[in-house]
Length: 271
Image 1: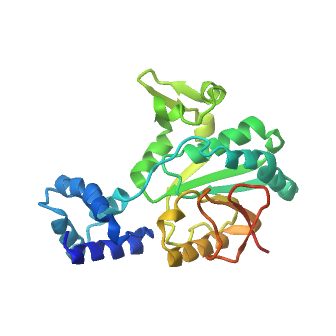
Image 2: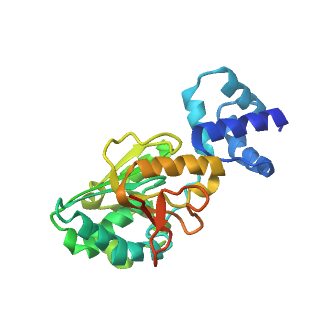
Image 3: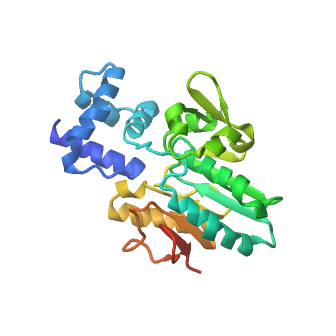
């Protein structure tokens, strides 16, 4: 690929998704955009880049961005963060919000929905103290196609066998009989999905109490991480909780959060 085309894609992806495409990722561009160019009946990636540059094609722009999104996820991913939620973080939020009996949760970069559904099942199954509360769970992702899958709540056998306890599967999923399972309406109706780009401010004017943004910032460069952390902090209540992935940290990027001792990747917004 010509250097000028690669440079254009680097800027395009960073400006539109925050994704930091490094010089050693030429192979990744070939793997992700080669098939897309064929789908658009273009001779090569160079032709695709030229069309991006000269035309305002919203669908092509979205398809290029979505080609680089990573949709790896599973139910109760990494286990320990969900133990921290059950044993420490959610009980603390219960005490904090007991007077108003409401809890607002946001899952950013939710991919195909396993994370917000895991959280909803956890609260339903093991957090009886929240009975009668007004609990809202909003989940977002940049990739509309993966959000469509999340909203449908239909998962293949291998997906429900990755991290999901058998008791949860038996209680909250229906076997559709064709190698797929659908999560119950009871759980599905509790999660609102929407498209959102982490590079842009959150649309909601209502701050949240718990914000999960796990395993996505590793793809961003330092200036972009700082910008995103500011957006996340702006969307959290004072004292609200931010949860990151195990390989992520606010250190060096934001002073608006304090680590919560004894937890895995959990931070409290500083007052």
